[in-house]
Image (cartoon, rainbow over all chains, first blue to last red; front, side):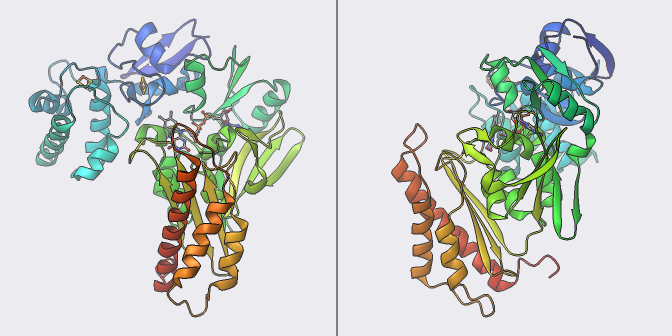
Length: 157
Length: 290
Ligand SMILES: Cc1cc2nc3c(=O)[nH]c(=O)nc-3n(C[C@H](O)[C@H](O)[C@H](O)COP(=O)(O)OP(=O)(O)OC[C@H]3O[C@@H](n4cnc5c(N)ncnc54)[C@H](O)[C@@H]3O)c2cc1C
Ligand code: FES
Ligand code: FES
């Protein structure tokens, strides 16, 4: 089947989509957007997190057909041509990126948290990121990055 | 495989009648895992995502009508005052990503003994509204689960909504898991006090082939609690309540916990939730308009 959707602001079309296929597969394999990572395909690791109509979801758990006519924003859609998104910048500066596999999902989850909550407490950060696994960092640097991103956003207001 | 995309509820019902093998998909948080891992290859998928009625809720005459496809996140933000037990359970489901998609209709559809929505629905006397081209009917949640992952749905039926009275007293949900977030329950327990009727509702999760109530424990409290002059709870009553809740369970040993541990933990959850709800009732804090 064919699926029409808007990805990072542009209308896109995927053909020959198998009806049981996930949105993650469509993004990575059909539309050439490998930012969202495929690790578990069962909603456990969060590395495939994308915005679907402005709500963060696991792309591996959305059937491609369910995204018909809807808007998807992936990690590729956060930075501009010139600049990283402030959340991405904070991850780089805080040393929250090691192998980087979990990073795209964490960036999207953090992006959503800091726009909803200007001053997240540590328990709020932990709750917001509970669905994202990292095998490398031990999470401390990630927490630093989220605090930094939130603080910068607060300053910029 | 076909991907069926009804635009309205009547169309969904006729597609389901024509394709009884078609598997509905709401949030997809259970179904997509099965598809991704080749555990299921249905001839058709029936996408409920375009049926707006299913993502709405309303309150009429003190009863909340909750569309089957309202995601957990909205139950938490929009319904915590009316359906506190369900909202508390919703807060413990998966991660934000899962709560943004997962639905009560999907939880019921999967009919897992560990479904977190089930105990609070049982405790609050909720009914499930189902429909087919043959017509609509309601099933009390206590009669909805027939066995492990088996529900009382005919093959042409879809879940439309759950109906549940607005909380008339304090409610609680408590869950034991191996960590704080992102866990399936080792066991869980929900309690709802109904002061207007002088009764109490219970729901046990993950400790029997189906979610179930603890009728003897409910009867004990209904007979003993003094609603007019609520005094501190006698310790013996609290202990007895815990024992009766544990006795109502039929747990198994599995990777997540032993049967003996589950019984023990249920008694603890029962005692705690009773203490919390009764304290709230005595202090008058539960009242919506207070
Ligand atoms: C990482 C992860 C963590 C999870 N954590 C929890 C947890 O903590 N607690 C918990 O209870 N669950 C948990 N789940 C399971 C799942 O999120 C819930 O069961 C959720 O309620 C399913 O809802 P859904 O809309 O996503 O269901 P779907 O996957 O869309 O559907 C589930 C089943 O219900 C059927 N169905 C859906 N809607 C209808 C309808 N209207 N009528 C008839 N049948 C229908 C489908 O055909 C399917 O068989 C978790 C899942 C994942 C992937
Ligand atoms: S790949 Fe989707 S959550 Fe792990
Ligand atoms: S940086 Fe390697 S998984 Fe997180």
